[in-house]
Image 1 (cartoon, one colour):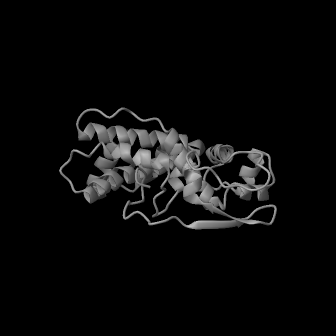
Image 2 (cartoon, helix red, strand yellow; image 1 turned 90 degrees about the vertical axis):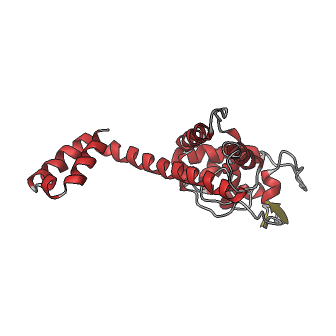
Image 3 (cartoon, rainbow, N blue to C red; image 1 turned 180 degrees about the horizontal axis):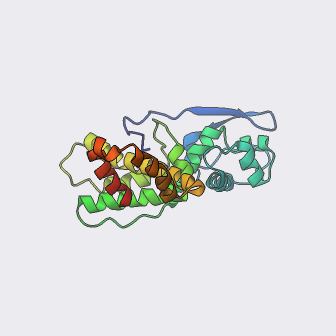
Length: 239
């Protein structure tokens, strides 16, 4: 999503998909993703009784749940966190996918950012650090895959800010977008690897693993058979 990995911007869609859902009162109403993303600036067109909670509260609850249980959270989990029946969620959002877009845009809006300074390498390093912190705070983000940009204020602000890191390079606009996404894709992959390593280490310490497996390999004489792999692999493992 622009300032997020896996999505490449442009051309922007002419309009957003209109989602239609049935409320608990049995009345159809439109729930456009763009309207929900920009809910702070677009007054919702609601009929009947005002909802007990706000969309912001539902999104905040969903983020809390995802931070706790990961990307496999369900709408039932979110409804339980809010304290409403699961079907009541459809008074606020159209689907889990739409809710996920709102969640992503909100965490993009709230993420901490290091003030950009120095040359383009330093600035891109700061962008990478910002995003690694974002994935550490919200691990479920690393599991999100989509080719479509999220066109909300949080994500657009993130994209605009991160493009400043490379805007003075002599690249075409397309290449600037591609260069930024190379960095963000690398950070996302690194975040996944770190999360996986953390889970592995809860079961067994790396040193314990190597002492056991290395002892078996030593009997096979792998250093003589694979000298380059043995030398560099050992150095990397001890780094």
